[in-house]
Image 1 (tube, rainbow, N blue to C red):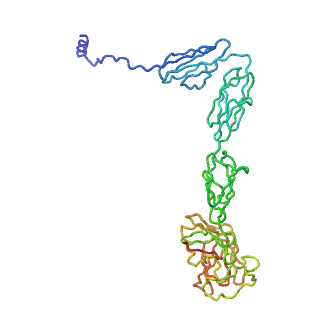
Image 2 (image 1 turned 90 degrees about the vertical axis):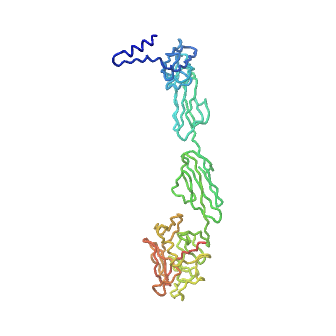
Image 3 (image 1 turned 90 degrees about the horizontal axis):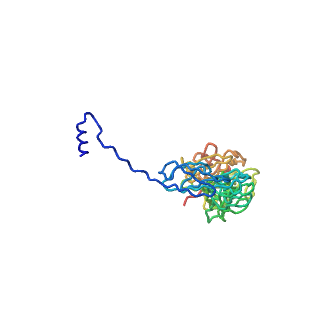
Length: 451
């Protein structure tokens, strides 16, 4: 009846009125218990016995006579300062258990000194404390290091092997103490990729190793098997200043490394691996005596006259490989470089003038002048040949242009002048093909058709 009359009155009211009944109370937050321990030698007081999640709770510890407060422990709660009294914490969404630790007050306080270490840090919860006080040492290894032990006055109180922060608890003795820790560098693996063409040794201070700490000097040596030569190093995570020397050194990074030595078919007086330019393989070395290559790509080799098989010294006293000392100033009697007079080793031949185009193909060959040599590199494979600029001997045997130009015979007769053949010239401006007297002397760089 009362609700009915209330509705009538609302209808008869003049103006705008809020006739909704007042709302009731909403849902209440869940409360969690704050359970206090029963510590020895003191008491705990709390601002709440239960609280909702997020409530700020204050705790106060009161020590008994002759004792003092040391620290708090609260389940499910991490305090920024466990030694503060009073202390406040934010209530989690769970019951908590509060404990307070008290220690006896003695007349003597003893010092606590962490020992400095360049590979990590040690922090103590106290700088001084009485006998029996509970201490906490926080040990933090630097990056790249791990902690393996903690010592007090030289005696180990903790051992392990961790790279993370380690907290160690310790009861204060009746003496001053020094706290130290042993930090050991993290060792990273060194893996060698095996090769059937050679072997790799990895050492540090002359000792074979398979792992090392960051900063360690690592020495690596590649030894090629018979018939092979070392080519280059490929190492993950490491950049060598020169990856083409068989004996190299690097500093170990803070990560695992994999080492691989690349080998190539070796050279002999009659064998050369060659480098491919287009469809033509060019030898990496000049011709020495007929049928042989020089030992090194930088060696000049011997000079030859057109269609003749005597190899002459490139510089110095004039002398041929077969004992002649008088330059041959007669014409060879043929406009064809005959096969029996080709000084290239078996399987190789003197290039024709057309073959030179494989070294001049735009966008495929990089041309560089390095000292007294020309270096030609196949851009696609990054393989190179070295062309010594050894000059030439003129029609009377005189030596000219040594170190500034390299002159290399082709097997092609000059189409411009009689008694001349085309010769390849390598200089600072590039590669050219010129006419040269048959009786002049030039170097020979052989080619081989790619099969």
